[in-house]
Image (cartoon, rainbow over all chains, first blue to last red; front, side, top):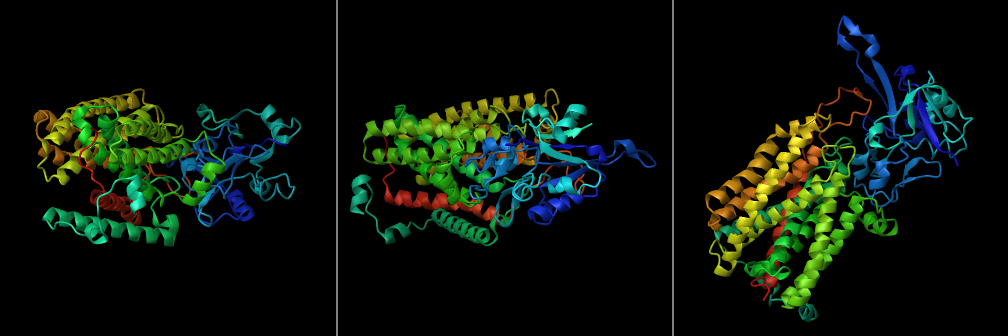
Length: 187
Length: 395
């Protein structure tokens, strides 16, 4: 089995939001700003026009961090949130009772309510779609025009993501919380 | 019915006697309030069934709303009444023995009202019952809280049956067990918030202990209201002695609570940790905290009890009404304040400018169901008074 993770070369992001569109199309996510598995946030440039600090502006793609020690998994009363065989944090809609505890416990704001099933949904690294068909990329990675995202097996030393993490400086979000995310931001 | 009477002694009643009551202005007022609240509850449930969670104002950023707060309000009340009821029949304090039956019955009906409210907040309550058993999440505070509250209710009902049968030995055994399970359940409810690493204003040991303290305070407020209404302020001597004693305990508990709260805010603000200090400062500036929690819930009752030297039961009944308003705000603020701070996880701009603080105001359906729960409590309590002899207690 693999241990999937993703590296984000976020400084390459141009905020085209193709990844968000591809994710929605691939995984049947409902339209609307509140319903999204992945997103591109941003920091406005600091300073006042015309003295703007352009370098301070950044686009920041993010999503579920697929933590190794996921708070959402710990707090779920019915084990609806679970780790699959590839270490991907998933939600079993049949078991989800919509207590929303996972939404409150997730430090990454990565979960939303799917209005059709009234259960909690989130990024699954395309486990139900592309990976299930035998493909090896996620929709967001596949569509990114500037190659922000690199998805792969962290346990495979030959994988592109392992190579990137060996050779590039990187950080994780809110690492002080001890959640051990499997999303890595390349600097 | 005879079979039930063999298990639990009941008064003789008919459907007609259940529906008739003395038409005093106070009784009529309570009748109309209860019917209004029950109507609101019914309307809210219909709204919920038609529109699901869309009938509520909860959002991705603020997934817990008024119904969670009202659920906590009721279960805190239940634990509080359980503690008050246990003073006599479990711990053997003579002054409180006459209150046991009424307090324990109150603890049963308040938790039933809480369950009625939470049933319409949990998206899939039937699924919950099934998978709580088939795939229990043992690391989840919600699982422990729910399971322990289920056990607690069972023990409370058994204790009440033994109380009604005047079997004090068994009442004490089940009362003590119920009390311990109830305290475990209640501190787990505090743990639901305490375990939230993502929300550092709530994270820590404070809430599990604070919940037990405020439960005792809530129980005392409620027992005053129940006896004030029952005897129309003409409290008999055997109850009076206990109530006056409770006023002293209440003043002490309120002093401890104010001490707790002061240190909570001092430690939260000291050091200026982002997400904790700024949230605490924001809470300190909110009217719901200052006027609701602090003034109504703590300061006014404490000052009145101190000024009257624990001798004015009539005043304490009115004080308790103000106190319960404060308790409501304590629960509402607890839930809302936990979610005040946006997580803003690498998305300082996301489609629109981010709010500095997450706003929430309950929808009409949430208000109807949440406060409608009080109507359910009134109705169950009224029927209980008609069906059971709640006078007297342990002997």
